[in-house]
Picture 1: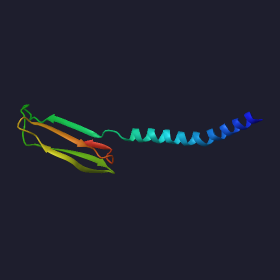
Picture 2: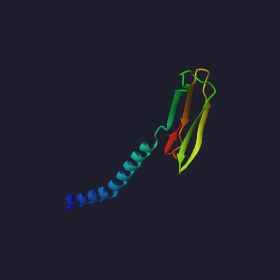
Picture 3: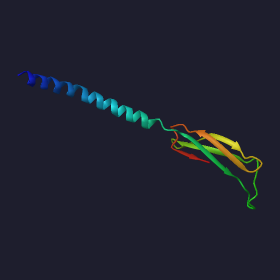
Length: 98
């Protein structure tokens, strides 16, 4: 009779610890998926209709959040018309426009 009691005890332990272990695994997966790198680099060159570089043009990145567009970052082009924005995009934004 003792082997049956041992099996019942083992069965109870599995029934107690299996849901807890499953929950821990699910939480670990959720936490690891949620830590995404939200850094975005936007770069380009502004030219006129003659394909000449244009300096001192304001480039604005705006984030869409709750049907509102908020300025996230802005920069002016350099003397060669180039710009580069490095943005840590907050998670509240669902879209980023330049």
